[in-house]
Amino acid sequence: MKLHEYQARDILARYGVPVTGGGVATTPAEARAIAEQIGGRVVVKAQVFVGGRGKAGGVKLADTPEQVEQVAGQILGMNIKGLTVEKVLVAEAITYEREIYLGVIMDRASRRIVMMASAEGGVEIEEVAKTNPEAIVKVAAHPMLGLLEFQARDLAYGIGLTDAKQARQFAQIATALYRAYMDVDASLAEINPLVVRADGSLQALDSKIVLDDSGLFRHPDLEAMRDASDEPEAEQRARAAGITYIKLDGDIGCMVNGAGLAMATMDVVKLYGGEPANFLDIGGGASKEKVKTALQIILSDPNVKAVMFNIFGGITRVDEVAKGIVAALSEVETDVPMIARLVGTNEEEGRRILAESALIPAATLAEAAEKAVHAARAR
Ligand code: GDP
Ligand code: MN
Image (cartoon, rainbow, N blue to C red):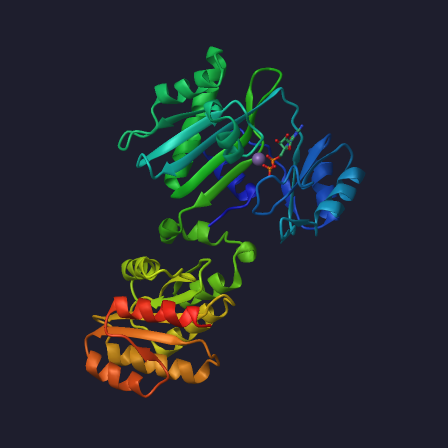
């Protein structure tokens, strides 16, 4: 789950990161009022879940409250990379001499939490990684001790912050960012740019936090901050129904119970030359309503040319799921071919129920994948 800049900023402020204050506005008049309170030059920033807002015209400086009102009027309602701007952050404008990048990620390759810094701040780190990877310095936090003081200092020296006082402040900010990352169960936390001011002090101008969805249950306060506006409708609907759904680019819809089985199902589809249209874990106790919702979600993707059910009945009984599928099919209008492989508790009864439907039965996972790939190609 992504957080907006102003939300990430508020979290980082609690950890002692020097962020700029200001407030959030949804109308030009509100933006003006905030600017009047701040006094002086301000920056007006679109609050949308995309990088590179600056380049897209979503970040603008303004000198007077009148200008702020005008600029906010331009940015609010603006479309940036497909998203409509509904909120702007109005904050004190900072003058600076250098832009730095600082970020924390979960690095799967090294299986460590890695902190990265770059002297080339202000641009997206992916861009730096492509064009000038040597400009990025990294340290891996100790799995038990966390980010150590000397590591944070190494980062500072690595990007040319050699002044002792500056290196100390950088280390404090890095440590605060790391602690925030760990405490909120983030998958990414970054400050870009972190700027160096004329007096040598450091200041965070833009904050970003992406939360790990699997850790969200521990943070109801963060869950309450969710802005679902950038999330595809199908994924919102799935979440509300307790179904895990991730849209992919292929044409074979997959309905599976259990995350591990869903992953294995996608592998087998690929093994037989197909491409899965989605990951879908319907979870335990798949009721008729849940099966129906899942089927509607899968079919809402126009690329889907065949649907494959792979259900393992353990605690969930196969005959119950079969009833759910038949009932759901009677209520969902579609001519997409469906292949079902249902095994486990009460499978004979389940198969008998499905025999009366239009579903194509399969005895094994391999057979189901083969039939699904075949059915999709035939369309
Ligand atoms: P992003 O493009 O979406 O990452 O948005 P940022 O918040 O990082 O802003 C983009 C750029 O706008 C920054 O790299 C700065 O160059 C500039 N900017 C943002 N805030 C300020 C500010 O307070 N003062 C000045 N002078 N420039 C700013
Ligand atoms: Mn930025």
